[in-house]
Image 1 (tube, rainbow, N blue to C red):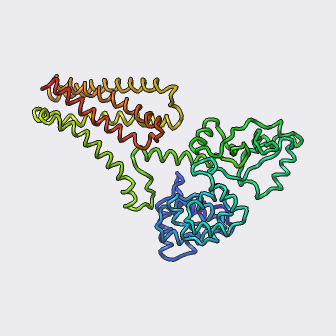
Image 2: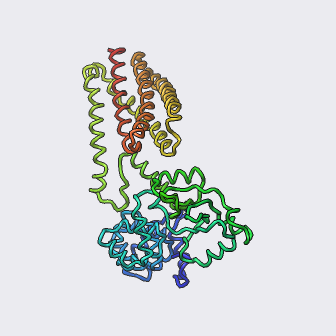
Image 3: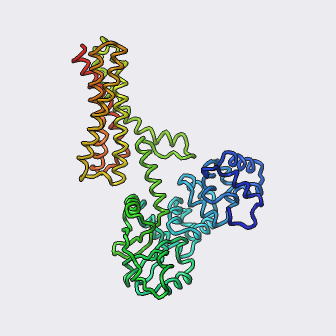
Amino acid sequence: MAGADPGRDPHAEDLEDIALGDDYALTPTYVDMVVDAADRGDSARLKALIDALEPEDVADLMGFLSADYREDIIPLLGGEDLADVISELDTNLREELLETVDPKRLAEALGEMDSDDAADVVDDMEDDQREEVLSNLSSVDRAAIETSLAYEDETAGRLMQREVLAAPQFWTVGQTIDHVRASGDELPELFFDLYVVDPAMKPVGAVPISALLRAPADARLEGLMEEVVEIPVDMDQEEVAYIFDKYHLISAPVVDAGGRLVGQVTVDDIVGVIQEESEEDILALAGVSDAGRDATILDIARSRLPWLLVNTVTAALAASVIGAFEDHIAKLVTLAVLLPVVASLGGNAGTQTLAVAVRALAARELNASNALRIIRREMSVGLMNGMALAFVLAAATWVWMRDERLSVTLGLALIINLFLASVAGILVPLTLDKLGRDPAVSSSVFVTFITDFMGFLSFLTLATLILL
């Protein structure tokens, strides 16, 4: 990979310039060069192209290639590079790749990974392959992976790496540094804090590495340590990310039920969690799952169909309102023209409020202590925007139709619908959250139903009372 192989292609720097754009994304030109080299069977050229990339970029490249091309690239990766690439792959691509790699090569790659990354990879394997790969690992590596897999998915136990730097509080800085130098591979590849522990291996504080290096050699750790935020091993990873963000942590110790140090979570893991949770929430708001670049048409259709079926039912209920006023609409066809305007604006207003509410719930900024204030605020916003839009569209309708009563009808319907849309946008996710459901998953379906139903009902009811 880039900067790692002294015998690499002398033109690798030029290839790097071609491979990545100013935004560090792979360029279409480079992807075409890889495909061309693979089509020609030019292994030397293909290796030069791959060596010009960092492992993260190779993982990105895999997403742009078909399975046949990916199989051409895997043999060109060394053990450490293969480990880094596997760690960075999307889950779908990783599962496919794992099926094509020899178990012994996989075991070598796992030996190069931190325990948390290795556990994630093993978790994606089929049972028979997992057993074969684990049998090729050292007893220490195998035990570490099996221990990680014993914890629930998406918890701190699965997120943490078991390798940590820990020392008793009576040690001096000099003793600690000597211990670090002597420990070698037993320590994490990257660490930020030294955890100070008591005789029972319970964290009593932490010393940032920067503070450790600046302190005199004879200074005792107990005089340097700071308070530490402990992460329970069974805590949900989303809660862990919230704690890291709230307290601006770089790393934190993970403790078991007895309070003993069992691992650590670092900020690089949290960045991945935040991105993963954000993507899940965005997709859930639309009622879809992550299709990925390699998903089949059948998989995508199957993931989206259930919520479309639910939406079909709610749309039919909303349309039933129009059917109930069919005779009135026939008398005044203009109502049919303006109906979508009322429903559409209400839907947009509801979606705006919903997005703000879901984000606030995810960021722990909305709870029982301030829910009433936020509800009142959103209701006021809905009423204010409804009045503003009512004035604009009522005036436009009067200019167009020269009908004061129709303008008043439209204006009042807009005020009612935008007000109710804001109420629905805040109350629906709050209610789902209170019931223990993910508000991002199904809120949009219910909010859309409410805004459509109430938009049609309010407009047609007012039209019946005022116009007919």
